[in-house]
Length: 167
Image (tube, rainbow, N blue to C red; front, top):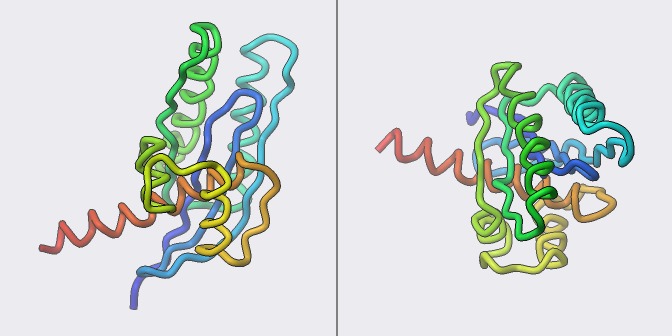
């Protein structure tokens, strides 16, 4: 009997940080929960990062995942935005790692390819496939759907790594 692994996917962001928790048992996936952390948009950057950290801690406490997955961020915006997103991403990577969780990182194209079948899929296509793969999933907005896609990608690649280890 295959073990069940609970995975949290996190779509990093300083304004909206999506999170999604799934369970993976063999090749079966199950929806657990998802949502969006929205730190305040005003105030000091350090305070906003603290709120992001607190939000992730609360999700980890409530859903107790075994593993985490985070999107590797691609930014074509200005330097200031890229720097702030990088700082938010650091919080997102560090928080589950502090709990001893293994944290996988995946490029956006790989996530889309794993879920939709093409690395250049539109957000609407990702959301549609998440509803197909996780029929009980209920999400509001692209951030939570993207986080679920990150978790699904991790589940698929986690299984591939295990098969390679056996061979």
